[in-house]
Length: 287
Image 1 (tube, one colour):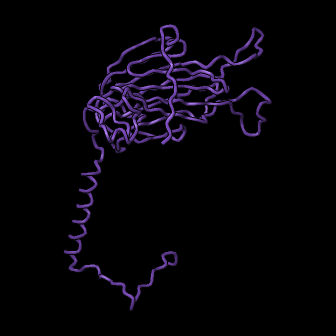
Image 2: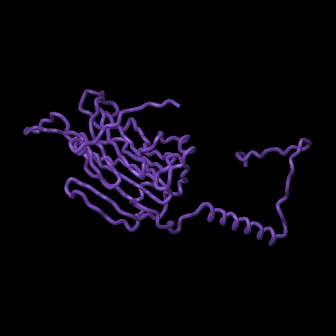
Image 3: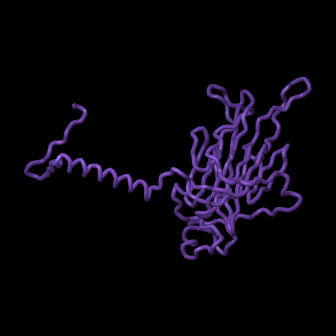
């Protein structure tokens, strides 16, 4: 496997708050305009000696039938996403290195199987929010409501990606001047911990002169930030458990079939296919 060593930028009191904001165990860089002209929004979650970083890239887009460049951009479309798994260890966190040296308790195992049912649990903990008007606030979350459990769904109006290791990415496909795009990252560093961060992004706001003449766009801005640090407190009520309920249902159905056979005193005839008398497949379309 090819490996590259990339320099890591250093955060100082002078540059950390220019386009960055911290909340709980999360960090948001941007949204900012990179050299290519695209908009980049970076979300970070930390746990133990490791962290997850994801960068969403949005580029200018025009409506269908409109010549690109003939008018100001009409939206920003998601065209690239990069994900990084990093840890303060002697070697890079890969499937091979984690198999040789299992991370100690409290540190994440990036390459581990996570069943999809692990997302659907009872979660409680704390939440840290920020807004331009409200500022920084802390909240106690007794239990997540269904409408707030975005980590367990994949709405079609958003771009979604669920990766091994308990990672879920969600971002708006297109951001316009009339909408605020919500970029999200959820992470299950272990079966009992759920970390989430979401950032609201506003872009393409017109910059107008006193005579209402548009001269450009305002720089993209961060409109909201939320970080959830949750722990599993139980199972959801009335939620099927595949290892138990589904098998139980199969047993009940088989018992019902047996009871019907016993009550009628007949059993379905068994047929055997052999080379001497092959069975002719039925054409269900002709029934």
